[in-house]
Image (cartoon, rainbow, N blue to C red; front, side, top):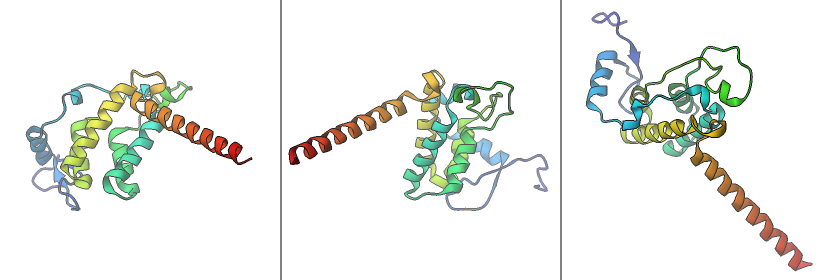
Length: 176
């Protein structure tokens, strides 16, 4: 604990590549001085999103931003944006267990973005947080809790794969 501020909470560093921690006062100052997307004021209902799909996207996106796979940064991002909630008594589909069990959990995307800036850089953390929050807002209203953007991307991949298989079959038939 800090001698000066015994109730101070410690958070992740805000300088890329450092191991120092900042106190709550410094984070509050950053929260006031940083401009965040307007959709950060909207709450995400984590019980309505498909946790597995979002988690996979987070890990892939972090790898793309860093240029290499980093399990620590990936899991940090997952834990910042996908809170583990207390288990609920409901048993069922992915959407009901999306937040690790169904209990209410809240995420402040502004704080999560600032915490990730220490790993990704300010610009990259801002882009990542904005893109992710937009997708999660979409996912909570989408069937099965999957963002429409990811559904469309998967449909396009499947269409390309089907076309490739058809081309290969045509080539095999022509060779006979």
